[in-house]
Length: 239
Image (cartoon, rainbow, N blue to C red; front, side, top):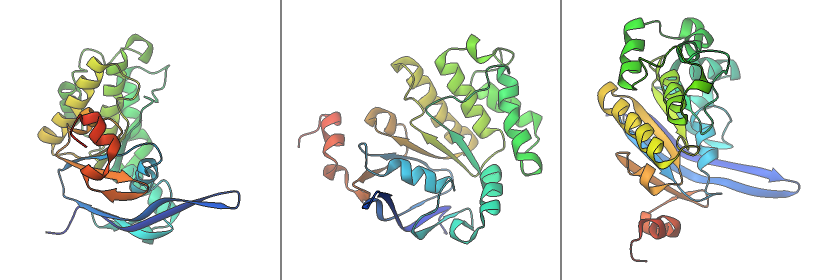
């Protein structure tokens, strides 16, 4: 069976003055449809660069990413923008909600931005807002919602167009432990009940454990768990 997401020999180097800083060094992996995968690693491991490549927000120096049959390396900038609107939902550490709009309008705006590429399925919108426990909070503005509720609105916004993949970048980074657990449970529930493919970037072992599979990055390369000292230390496993 062909992989739903395929990353092949991804390389990305940034230039700081005259110094070249490798961010990713020949990274390859596959993800099947409906998987929930965490990508973990310390600061500087290449997690954020990989997130931007998967989201089509930047280009690799070499290698390729294929999502649901679309090869990013062969798409123009305009085609990549269309693909992002149609196939990718984003959840960031910052909620990025519009303060003057209520929760429902913040969710629906994703459909407006996607235009004809988006879905228009009121029944599905009700399904995800029920699933995320937002049905009674839809007419509240962000200032009237808790941090956990705001992140759930952001997750609903990411799901509303029924994307091929949801990319979550440190989705619990601004939340306390209780709200973090709620949001992570909602991500897992979205994966299990909606069949949503999810890739989550995190430095937190507890957050990563909500996924079905964990990919460890260190110094721009995929490594085995025992080669990630920070992971081993946080897990409390013997070195």
